[in-house]
Length: 136
Image 1 (cartoon, rainbow, N blue to C red):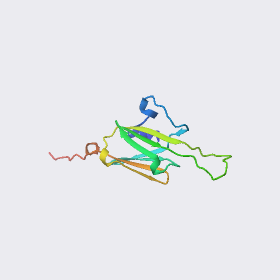
Image 2 (cartoon, rainbow, N blue to C red):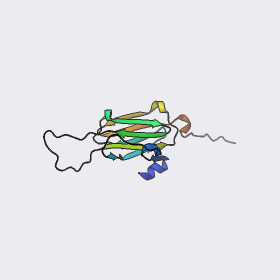
Image 3 (cartoon, rainbow, N blue to C red):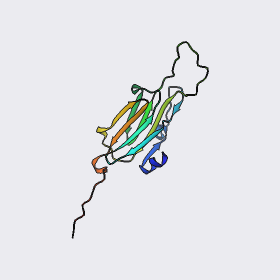
Image 4 (cartoon, rainbow, N blue to C red):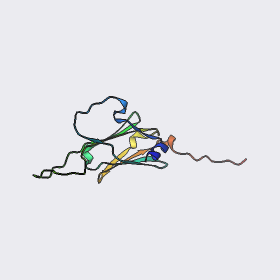
């Protein structure tokens, strides 16, 4: 996926955007797997956020940095005590610098079955333009 990110000029940002930040909530933070696709009109990101509900996810675009954050609570199994687990529970964080001019008013984000889909429509000036060749 790193090759696609480079070729599309979408770069991963360090957590906190290089600014020293402290979390007030304890627990693990995972970097969700992300697929990025591009067509003539938009960039589309698909982020895997298992265990997160739509109300637990926050997506922001500020200063050309797209940030995805999700809070996940540990699963309680009634009166049972968990004796073994292979699935790690924790929050998610991922940030990208977007270098394409994006139409911020038309950004869409939808969550379904643990996958977040974000559509970032390109501004008209960023779309490829066909130049007509004239004879003579």
